[in-house]
Length: 402
Image 1 (cartoon, rainbow, N blue to C red):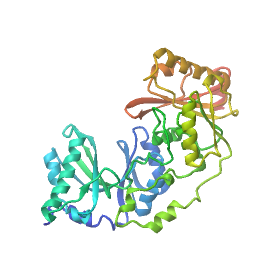
Image 2: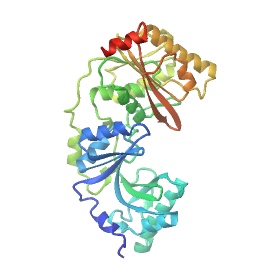
Image 3: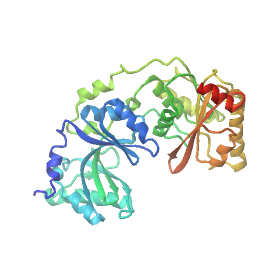
Image 4: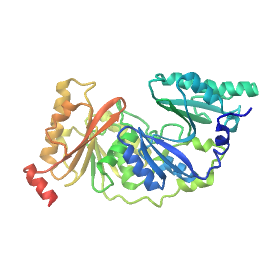
């Protein structure tokens, strides 16, 4: 049975194309950083999209993007694009594909959906319709069907809908790339690893000084800061990627890329982390040990009021509580104490703070010199830079610009 859309031919070429389009998904606010990462890796045709970056490259590029991109959530390889105005049209278009060119009845698969559309308001229903179309195609052609699996499927498909424009892709990553593989434990509100890396890269962290997170929680910022400083790919901790199950998987090529440490660099400073919670510091210690970075990261239980600068020009990035589980009075006091600490003891340093609580950020009592709008899960946050100096601000700015 032949398709009428020409999608069959596209899929037959799917695993033999030397260069092909790809899409890297990310968080809102990190698109430009991700585009820079992909450009540095050698990607072609890099274009910033909504919470994503499109690019092109070969199989080597696909493997490198999964291994090296710190701000990518997943790397997708589009199969085909089409327009649909409702879920019935979506079902029909998906079912028009000769699916046995990709899947076999003994394979397992899963589908996830990303939807920005008034016509398709329920992403879960979109997922069901795509699954139904694939399964029904096999049932009609083979009287058998591949199984749907949430746990470690052979193939992961993504359907992306913007308006009525639909793109079906094969997910080369599998589990989200924020799941690096080094995290053993976590506190109540752990920072997503991709967001942490994006914050550090927006802040300009490259390992140029000592680093401090005075409210380190489970240690995500500390570990990501060490990986950036040493230029260690974040993907080396992962147990697997989805593309390793693809029929064209090149193990020799992947092993060569995985084992290539030629771009790693020395780090001559120390990354310091502290927290008032002994429980949080214990979890951070476990995660740091799991990452193999204990040599570079120093941890201690310490309230921010008692902290001392580790050096004259340390780099500070922190993710304080936003106040969801603390009374306003307590959260305001925490931010005020942080601001007081920075003003009194950290002259000559640079500090970055992320929070969804704008009123609490004002309690820091310092004027931010830069600010970025980022999303931490469902929370819209401000990521703000504070340049710390002694004396008058105008004198500092004049000296800085001279």
